[in-house]
Amino acid sequence: MSRLVSLLLPVLLLLVSQAIATLFPESNQSAPKAALQACNQLAVSLGSPILQTSGNSYEKAATNAWNLENGQYQPTCIVFPTTSKHVQIAMKAIYAAKSHYAVQAGSHSAMKGWNTVQDGVLIIFSNMREATYDPVKDSITLGPGVHWHDAVTALEPFGVAPVGGRVGDVGTGLLLGGGLSWLSPSQGYATDNFKELDVVLVNGDLVTATATNQFSDLFRALKGGGDRFGIVTRYELYPVHTGTKDEKNWFGGMLLAGKYQPIVIQFNSSAEALLNATARYVREIDDPKAVLLSTFSNARTGDSLAPLYLMVLFYNGVNLPEEIFGDFLSIPAMSSTLGPMSYFDVSETLGLGNDRGYVQRFGASALVGDEETYLEAFDHWMNFTQAFQGDFNITTLAFTPVPNSQIQAGRAKGGNIINAPHGGFAAVQLAEQFNAGLNRIPPQVLEGLDLLFEQIPPSPGLPLYLSECDPRQKVFESYGDYELLKQIYAKYDPEKFNVKHTQGPVGL
Ligand SMILES: Cc1cc2nc3c(=O)[nH]c(=O)nc-3n(C[C@H](O)[C@H](O)[C@H](O)COP(=O)(O)OP(=O)(O)OC[C@H]3O[C@@H](n4cnc5c(N)ncnc54)[C@H](O)[C@@H]3O)c2cc1C
Image 1 (cartoon, rainbow, N blue to C red):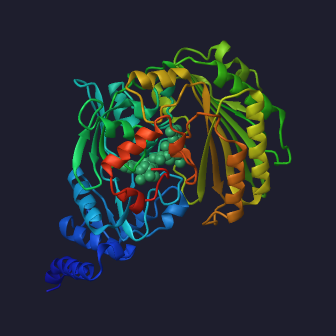
Image 2 (cartoon, rainbow, N blue to C red; image 1 turned 60 degrees about the vertical axis):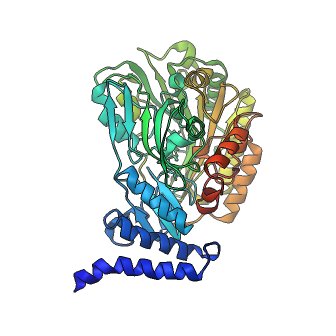
Image 3 (cartoon, rainbow, N blue to C red; image 1 turned 180 degrees about the vertical axis):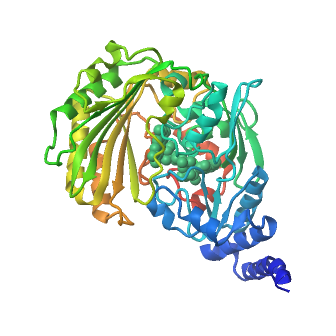
């Protein structure tokens, strides 16, 4: 009897929700009702374990988001697809019910609501984690749920790597926002390395997009345009022949500066020297083998914050050439890990970054300029940090050089929708991790961030980085191909279903 009930229950729920749907015209349906309708439909068409509404796997997945703010949502149901077909079925039900929804891959979006949903359907790719290499096609294929460390580990024996993230636990959502990789100076943004994409469109149709087929416009939009255009269920990528673990064909590592002293040292000399070195590097170095990440943090030690500056330097060669890295190497470091490395070692340098349980916030800028420009940005960031120091566990100001070689490499592979006018600038990331125990960002800190964005605006014509922006920043408007992006969006989602039913970047 109980088995009969459990078999019939989804059907009954569906009939009830359909009856409700006829009473309420779709446009008047509230979000919870629309979500329930979609979830009830999916309970029938997908069933458990693909569809979950409660229980261990539901709870674990709903609370797993890297940004604690996103771990506090309770989706009406979660779909755990194992095939593109499951995603099609889910999207058709979501579209028919006009339900809110969200998609989650590696879960590392810092943007509130971008990878989860309240009163809606959440699609989580944790069961689609393929990472394979086809030597005949010379292609890497990734499932959308794979994390970068797992992808690099699976592909290393073949001597290849994807142009992916610098931190291991991050996922493939990085590709859709652009993607800044250790391999970017020679290979372009991560997204420049798309070969073929399987995409489930907003109406549930599955298409394969390439640079030359009838979906070439969609293909271009997905190279930096984020998640509004469809759900990618398979990434085929150009590989980079980086070598295996045994091939120590890189040199580099980390330099740490700073003394973990109280924040009263507002502007110490090592910060100034490192900022000057960073400014000169960004302006002058255009060597595809050279890689830099320059980060300035203030990290909690007891009741106060203390400076910690981390420079990550690599060269795809046998040493760090003096003419490229000399400025950095001449600054006394607290500790250093420099030495010969394989690309696999390079990819492990920053670890997994899988700390959970903190509210997180990102913000973006993009700078070209002289030393003064960098010192001013640092000064504004320090003032912001001091103003709200009681709220932060860690605050960071990071510079990733985007050299001309990166922009040229991307253009040689067909270009992307970001279409930066030139290289020779720094992608600037502002990141805050709030104190443990805080589960929302105090409004005064958000106001402080607004001021900080005004104080460190992007240099004219330069694009903001979507994957590391503040949700209120107008990233698309900063793109070289913004008009084209809007046209492509209008073609693939004429009803603006995704703008109305998912949270994400503004401006489409
Ligand atoms: C610790 C840390 C380190 C980072 N390091 C780097 C770095 O080195 N380089 C860099 O470029 N960025 C970096 N980032 C930023 C990173 O690119 C973004 O956070 C990115 O969005 C994470 O992707 P994800 O799959 O982990 O996250 P998710 O939150 O799962 O996804 C991010 C966004 O993409 C959407 N999405 C995901 N998969 C799909 C899909 N298949 N189809 C459609 N939409 C999809 C989601 O809905 C969400 O809006 C880092 C972030 C963190 C937190």
